[in-house]
Structures are given as C-alpha cells and as structure tokens.
Length: 552
Image 1 (tube, rainbow, N blue to C red):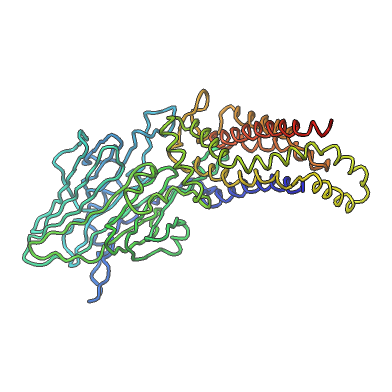
Image 2: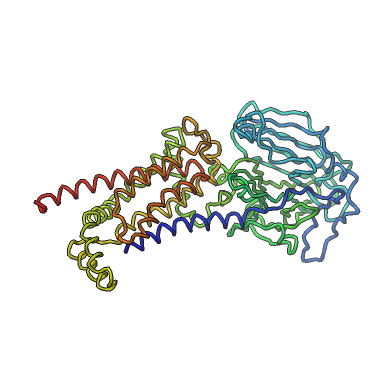
C-alpha cells in the first residue's frame, strides 16, 4: 500500500512535466522570429458566388495605387483616438485600425511608460484590421485600399461614448462611411460600415472584415511564461473553438460558412478579434500570405436599391482577455482564455478568486483565502485520511517488528500486515486520498495563473510583485520545501528503506521544480501544505490521546 503513495507522488511530477512539455510542443517553436518578405502584393477579398453564377472578382493587378501605402512605416494621415483604456491610430487609407496601444498594461512592470502594443503597421510587426465593401459590378468601392477622410485628426474620449466617422472619398452617386464607437472602460469597438446608394440603379456587393498579422514563432525560455503561450490565429464557427497552426494553413487553407462565428489573433494574455453580425451567414477564410496569416469574414451578397441604404455592423475587440468584456462582445469569445483540460475546474476557481479579490483587493491574499476554502470543503475527507495516517504512525514499531520476523518471506509479511491493518481498523490506502484530491485543483490553479490576464503583474507583498512569474529570490519555493519536509515527519515512513529514502527526497525535488513555477502557484501549494501539516499534527495529537488509556 505504501507503493500507492509513492506512485501518486511520481504521478504528480509526471503530470506536471507532461503538461509543461505539451504546452511547449503546442505553443512554442525554437526558430527565431521572422519578418515577412518584402514586395508582397495586397489583394482584396473575393465576392461569394451566388446561385445566378460567379460574380467578377478584383484581381491583384487591378488593385488601386494606394496599395503601396500598406507597407509604409509612417502614417502622416492617420487619425488618433484616445480613450481611458485605448490609444489607437486609424489610417485614412482604408479607414482601418492600424495601431493600438494599451496604456493600462505596460510591457514591463519596471517600465510603465511603454504600453503593450497589439495592432501595428510596421513591416516587421504588422498586425492590422482591413474592412470595407466590394462591389459586384466592379468600379469604385469603399474597400480597405480606398481613401477616407475625417473631420478631425485627433479624438479624445471625454464622456462615456466617443463616435468617430470616416467618409469615403469618391466621386459618384454612391457614398460610404465607417463609423467607430468607443466606450469608457471598454476594449470593444463598434464598427458600422454604411453605404448609401444615390444612383438610379441597384447596388450589389458584400461587406468584409479581415485581420492580417505577421507570423512570429516564439523561442523557448524555461523561465518565461510568455514564451510558451499560444500566439496565432483562432476561428470560432458557432460551436467549436479552434486554434490554427500557421504551417497547416500554408498547406491547407480553411474556408467555412457559418453564423455566430468570429475570428481572432491571440498573444497570450491579449487578443484582437472581429465579430461579424451574429444573425447573418458569413464566410470565414484562413490562409497565409507572404509570412502573414490572413483571417477574412465575408458577408452574403447584399442588394441596395436605388436611393437605399446598407448598414453592416460588426464588433472589434482589441485588448486584454478580460472575461467579462469578452463574453459581452461575442458568444464564447471568453474561450480564448484557454484553461485546457482543466477548464471545468479552472473557470469556477477563477470566478471564486475574482469574488474574493473584490473583497480583499490582493490576488495573493485571494489565493490564500481560496486555498483555505478548498481545504474546508474537503476537510471531512482529509480528516478521515489523516486519522488513518496517524494510526499508521502509531503502528510503525509493530510493522517494523513484522518486517524483521518475516524478512525472508514476502508473502507471509504481506498477510501479517493485512491482518494487522484489519485488526486495528486502519486503511493504508486512505493516506493517498488527499493527494488525489489536490492534483486536479493544483493543475487547475496552474492554468488559472498562467492564462488569466488579471494575474499578470499582480503584486502580493514585499518582494513578490508579480504572481504570474517565478519568485525572483526563490524564497517561496524554499519555504514550501521546508514545509513539505516537516509534513513528511508527521506521516508514517514507508516500511521499505528505498521508498523511505525516495519520500525524503520529495521535498527537495518539488523545491527545485517549483523554483521556476509562477509565484502564485507556489503560494497555493505552500498554503495547502501548511494547512495539511497543521491538520495532521492536530489529528496525531488527538489519536495519541485516545490511545493513552489503552496503553496504560
């Protein structure tokens, strides 16, 4: 039975290592970041075929001369928009978002003046939206290469809502505009593409939204959490959430027509997403082009009668993975916070952590409180297990005597030990239950700390100023190792000398392993170990008192 406990400890180590290794395999690469080849030709999305036959598509050679603007390094004609949480640039060529900074999220905690930049128009880091409309009959159209103009070059949010309008610069009876709506505290941006047909003829065409981003494979770093997080394209078809591999897209592009879908580009704690109208059928395409991945959403064919008006309303999201805002933006957009196999435990754990944080205003304290609550939930189970462990500890001298008596007869020793357990009403396997209970919660906590942006750069106290990275001075891992060592002294030692030596090494092994884990995770395990140690000490004391009259 002692083998079970040893096997479970190794199972914990093995599970941690497999999770870590799988994360590395899925979400990282040893290759260096690459820049897209120069001279790539910009294209426009093709119009969906309809029942009457294939409609003409704009060939790359027909692209207007403004395509050259896509590769320029500056945006002299850009419109700047600042809110309390966003600082963005809208290029007047195309009228699209081409840069987005997040003032509330510095790249490094020691350099708060340098914000995280998601969207970027520079050639080596290009990550932009491209939106517009395509005309079925050809001719001028308000696509992402067309010129737009705005009434002002800079807008600043002063109230709860800011509306920025860019008008299509074109001659003729058809006019169009792009209307962006920014709201206080929100990373969601409303986008309305409006077309008014002032001609005598009907207008036919499609609306589209697209995201382009340079593919940048991540290098490995054992101590960096970000280097093992997923960074790449994601598609949601209304039922399934799928991360897309760049190399797979090179070999086999993806195309599907669904409703209630969305597309996204993910960068660990952050993302940019496009959510087309959820009640409309939309064609989604994912492909690669010139070292970039390209995600496109194209509407069904729209008919605008003479004198009519067409409004296509989409939602953009540019910012951190704040689950409340993600769920408000689109159905299941919060799935981009990927807790993996442990989602069923991680999501309620995060919810509980968030509620406790609202009360204590410190994520480290919240982790301690939640650990105590989990311990209380399983108190009865662990108490029963603890009593068996305490009785086993009391039986240790008698078990040692049996080992000496039957040292040459393993079968007789096993039978004698089982009779001793039965006579004393001890379950030797009961000591394994606490470990079995802790394993899934431990792994769920691991993913909550890694994936939740709320934990990013979250301070605890003293030298712990970021719970999502390792303890810079390794104090918490050392305290945890010391606590585990004391805990082993409270539990009965395995009768086998080899197993006993291995169990004595476990605190050292865990200390080395946890030295590189997020400080928040080590804090959870340290708190859990201390609580388990105190509980076992109390149980040992009670059992010892209960046995005193018998011994007398």
